[in-house]
Image 1 (cartoon, one colour):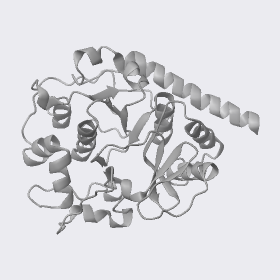
Image 2 (image 1 turned 30 degrees about the horizontal axis):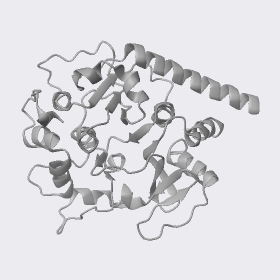
Image 3 (image 1 turned 180 degrees about the vertical axis):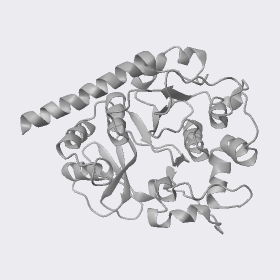
Length: 318
């Protein structure tokens, strides 16, 4: 059994190595998204700093939705000195976006200096859950789902986000490179692989491993739990509105919540399935979040969706 586990893990890691090799050699940055001195470093060098904010789009979509655009823009706004990288399965090396492209979100995000969108074809053998583990284990940094709106910097280096008491999400997490917790997660990913159970390779995996590392207890007020060199952040940090209440983001609040204890907000797009959208002038909570935390996305994709965005040099691009 141990030999089979080692062999399976070796195959997974070999695929990850192929993925990263191809990423380094063949990935194409479709935006002029970094200052010249940074863009010359290449994607591998940028990720190797261990400070990147990483997003993954594993569907075939090649036009980011307004929510994806808002998630990426808000992260670039909150972390202006860190690379923000968006990997998209639907992009290939042959994907060419002309200067008059009708993909408005690409045009919008290209105006932000520290955002990267890269093409990657070799995604077939790596699920979203596995890929986020491999990227953050190898390079370090913060992973975020594409429906997470950043509102203030996360002050932790090695952390998991509690979705509820004693249960971890894998929608937001951050680690230094080669952290042993993520290595053990990748081992457990192989040993307990079961794609028939939703979340078994994702939040359930993180929770299984966290219980091995830490003696979990209920949260007291809005305080985080710490064990070894790992922080388990209170549900209010990212999930102040729990998934059964996800529709509240699309309602009018009076007064609006301050989210003073939160670093980012998970909008539960998996529950939404695209049924509810941001409506201009609705004064809903989500519309006001867009206005405040991703103003370009709101201006060009919500207020004036027919407009095109052009890159204008200057401090406004930061």
